[in-house]
Image (cartoon, rainbow, N blue to C red; front, side, top):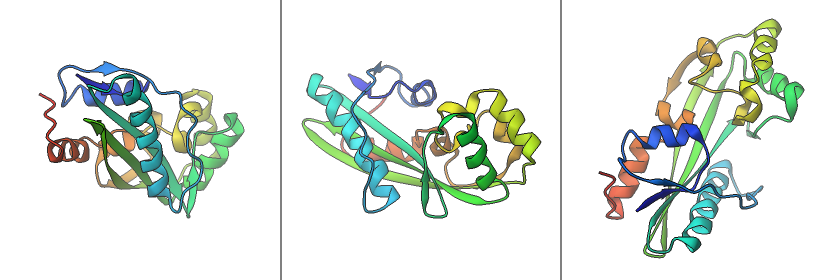
Length: 186
């Protein structure tokens, strides 16, 4: 059985596009908070999630993922309330940033990992635009304080890379990783 070590409805929705049957088993392990670089951090947390769940399901294939937003060398996690969301979005407005997702697959007691990086370019947002978006509540539980598939779509000028990575699960990279370890999602 395939297990997704995540409670994210967005990841579940994306995985359904390439995998017919799987279980959802959220991982509540304390995340790693520092690493040599942002990509290493995302991969470390993806491994942590997959390996933690795999301990309970050693015969299954477990997928872990962790997505972070990086702007000007700083990691933008989930905001600290409405004010935090406003500040993050104000910094992202009119600028380019990266979305990095670390992936991990645990199969037969071994962990395999990869990462995907996508560039996102925001157009200019006024303070009123940002306040209106924050008032929807959508950005309050999202890394970087926004959802590509949500209300900020109107402010995203362009992306370079995998759109599904920005949503939280890079399907192309996941499929390649799974194939390389002999895992078929069909």
